[in-house]
Length: 178
Image (cartoon, rainbow, N blue to C red):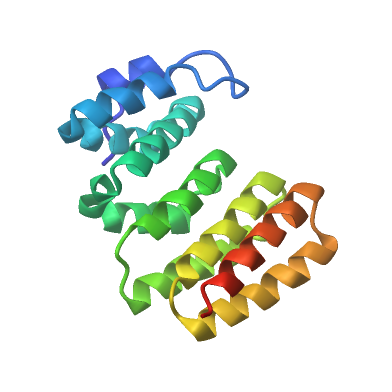
């Protein structure tokens, strides 16, 4: 997956981290031409952190519209989830990983990674990890209860954004309990 000289990398390069650059354009290209998702995924390992950040943004947006795009890259995504320290990739992976069909071992790997993200210095990563854990909880009542307890604890010490997201997630988790 370590293709660093792609056309998408050229589109995603330049500027700084405060801008998404042409990530929306790349997401639209992939939406129209799904076979190019492989090229976009390769950019997640680009040597340029700006390209990686924008590739994660574009991949998240494209997979929100077409979750099936992620399926052929499940192993790569789970590997990246375990290895990346780049906050922008972490928060986008927290959105994408729950879109995958995961077996029990893969779900545990993802949950372990998301739990580790809860100690990230970036509040966006911590908030995304809360969301990812809630999304993974799905229909598993035991896991839902554990995640709800964790979110309640995080709301006591989290940022205002984490508390607001936590309230939404608790409603979601408790609403799916019935």
